[in-house]
Image (cartoon, rainbow, N blue to C red; front, side, top):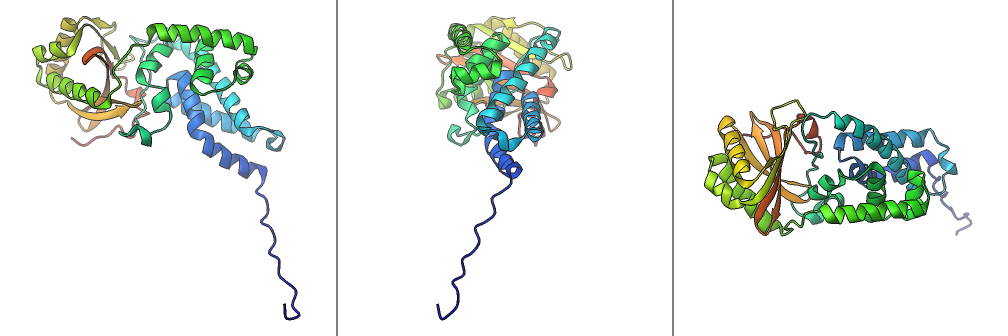
Length: 307
């Protein structure tokens, strides 16, 4: 070395626990959001829960946590379950039917957040019929793959009790989950035909698309005009939709993908004022979920749209 001592660069200093925790938290954020959203069906509430989990972490001795991922998932689950229990009371006083908040996902499911597959719109609607504990056990175990020991830690129950909860929830879901068509192209074609018939007020065209037992559910939350009860039967649903199209003749439809399925947004005055999700079975529309509550558009990339 020509008489000179070899220079050995110093090893980079290890990042402090707080910095490592922040990096891991940000990497886990989509999964944590998915857990909270699956439990709550509310984008805004799920985002608040994830933020609360981060605040809890900052108040904890981070270097004493052996499994940070497990800690964050468990804490997020507990916080979401607390919110869900409180929300059940509020939803009992909700004006009209309550629908989940949609999340806009990428047109290609491969490019989308994993919740698109596990938290389809139809699944979210069915999950609303479960008790908070059943929903939590099902979502955490069946959807996100937690062991029953981990589910038990989140729910404050034994693994055996959580296994029973998940089993009951699974039976309930299987009984009530509709067998909707999943072919994106076929689904998109029906959505486009529905949009055309609705906007033109084509009653016969809508009747051809609707299943005889079709059900329309509108969620206005008492903030905008909406049907207070579900509308049942193809004829009544078609007439309701034609009436809406005449009343809001200035509204236009824009295609969108929510929770992994093609859907529509209604736009008026450059602002999104509704989301329409269709349940399609054997090429016929079985359910029309029309979300109009403006407080439930947080999961859309924007509530502004060009006319």
